[in-house]
Amino acid sequence: VVPVLLIFFIKENSFREGTPKRQKVLIWLLCVVGPPALVCIGGAMGLNLPSFSLVFALFVSAFALACLVPQKILPESRNPLSRFFIRYYRPSITLVLKWLKSTTLIAVLVLGISYFPAARLGSEFMPPLNEGDLLYMPTTLPGISITKAKELLQQTDKIIQSFPEVQHTLGKIGRAETATDPAPLSMIETTITLRPKIEYEIIQVARFFSSWPDWLKKPLTLIWPEEKKGEIIHQWRTRKIHRFFSSWPAWLKRPFTWIWPEERYLTIDELADDLNQAIQFPGLTNAWTMPIKTRIDMLSTGIKTPVGIKLMGPDLDVLSKLGAEIEAVVRDIPGTLSAYSERVTGGNYLDFHIDRKQIARYGLTIGDIQEVIMTAIGGSNITYTVEGLELYLSSLGNN
Image 1 (spheres, rainbow, N blue to C red):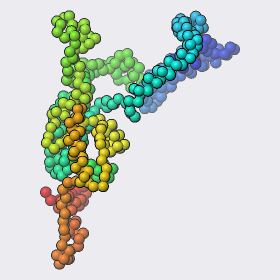
Image 2: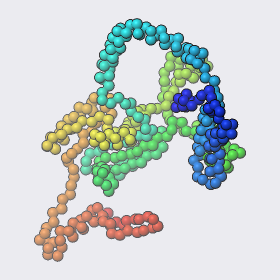
Image 3: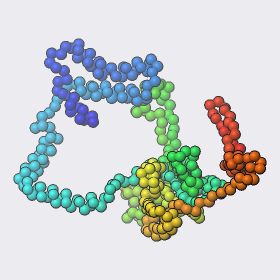
Image 4: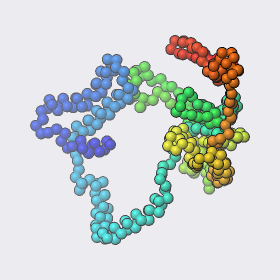
C-alpha cells in the first residue's frame, strides 16, 4: 500500500509556485509535528490512549515528511529498473504480435489441458486450516448411564492431559438446558488446547522508560524491548528425518543440518494419531477434528466428521441395519481412522403406569404422582439463594 501511495503523493514540487513561505512552514508543522504532538498532549491530559498511538502518529509524520520533501523523479529512459523491464518486454510483445494466431492457439490449448486437473479438484479446494487446537468428539452406544458417562469423560481427559503437547482439556457430556444443542449422553466433546511448539522463559528487562505510560514507551520498546527470551522451558516431541548424510560423522554433517535438519516437530495429524492409539475403550468410537471446522460442518451438513454417509427412509429398523452394515464396510477402507453408525433405535426408557382408581382413593391426581416421580428421579428446584450478584438454586432429589 505504501509504495502505491507514494507514487500518487510524491512529486518534484510539493507546493505550487507562489505559495507563501509562512503557509509552507504552517503545513510542515501541521503534517510532520502535528500527529505526535496531539498524541503527547492527549496523554498528558490523562486520556486512555492505546499503546500503538505514538507509533502510528510517527508513521503518519514520516509519510508526510516523505511527501513534502521535494524528490527528483527520473524519467523512464534514465530509470535503470524501467530500462531493464523495457529491454525484455519489447522483444516479447513484438514476437507475440507477429505470431498472433499461434499465440492465441497455444493459450487455448493450455486452457484446454488445464480442464482435466481443474475438473478433479472437486467443489471445494481449500486446505485444512490449522486452528492450533483439537476437538475430541467420541461417540458411545445409546443407553449409557450418567455415572458411566462421567467416568468415561474423566478417564479420556486424564489420558489426553498426560501428553506433553497438551496444555489444557475441557470436557463436556450431555447437553445444557437449551434446545439449540440437543446432545445426548452418548456424545462427548473435549476441547484440547495445545501448547506452542517451543515455549521460552520470558525474562523481564528493566529499562529507563519502564515506568512511562504504554503509549509513550511503545516506540522505544521496538528498539530496546522490555522482555527477552530465556531458556526453552517446553517443546513438542520430535521425529527423526533420515537424510543422505545421517550416517556421516557429526563434525562433517553439521553444516548440512543447518539447511536440512534431521529432526522435526510432530504435526497435528501425528499428534491425533498418537492420541487415538492411547484412547481405546470398548464401545467408544473416536473422532478427532478442529473446533471451528466441526461447528461449521455440523451446521451445514449435520455431520461432525470430514466424511459421512446419510441414509433416509421410513423404517428405523431397516436404517439401523443398513447403517451397521455400512459401518463394517467403511471401517476396512484404507485411511479410515474410525467409523460409527449413529443408532436411531435401542434407547432405554422407564415407563410409569399410574393406577387412577388407586390414587383416587387417597385424593391424589395424575399431576401429584408425576411431580413426585419427577422429584425422585431428576430432582426439583425448591428454592434459591442470592449471594451478592450470584444466584444459586437448591434442588431436592433422591440419591
